[in-house]
Length: 267
Image (cartoon, rainbow, N blue to C red; front, side, top):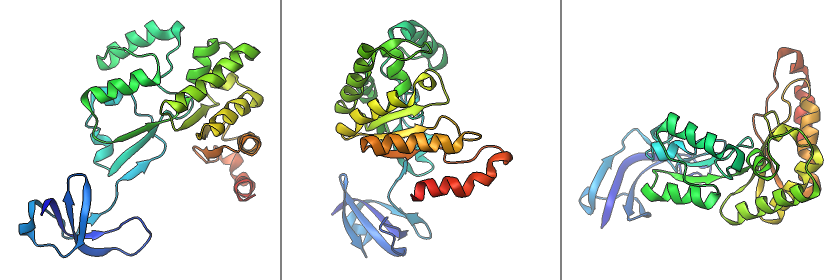
């Protein structure tokens, strides 16, 4: 009846209910039955007594990308029960690759992972992942730092109107081609060179195209509250769904800000 039976495990199905002991019958890619199932009905059987069986975990803040080309088995995730990655965080994604750093990126990839850089955009990167397949589900944001570098270089200056329009177009195109949204790393160059109004313009495009906004804020210590205000303002002005990465308070001198920081979210 089944390709695989997982027998006797404690099932946590992700709905918030209590664990219950049962067998799971799987055929192909689908769970076909949950209950008391005889072992003879399965081509293969996994005995899961005293173990927990649950849906795979989603790592919503991940930095794995080119590493999957070197090791598509992704054991460091799989062995933790993670079956879905959301990568491209903190303003950094392996696409688009800026022309001025292409040769440097190519050399670095070859030296570090013995891989050839054969793509420049999201479609090219996805095609490389699909060549050999990977052991888990992969999704990615497009990094604002990568977009800024590709559109206007890596200098500390505001964009021209033409450069801003190019960045907005790139955000839209990347989401249309499979990115789940936009990320920023406002403590890192070149993302840190962008002012709030530039980020808002890009977030507006992300929202219009169904993408989310994940940010490593501009500061997580002395300017924590101001950075929270900037992040929330971008979401309020554009309607984009906001995820704040690394929601923390750096350094003991700032720990007293915890109530004010939490209040910002409650508002």
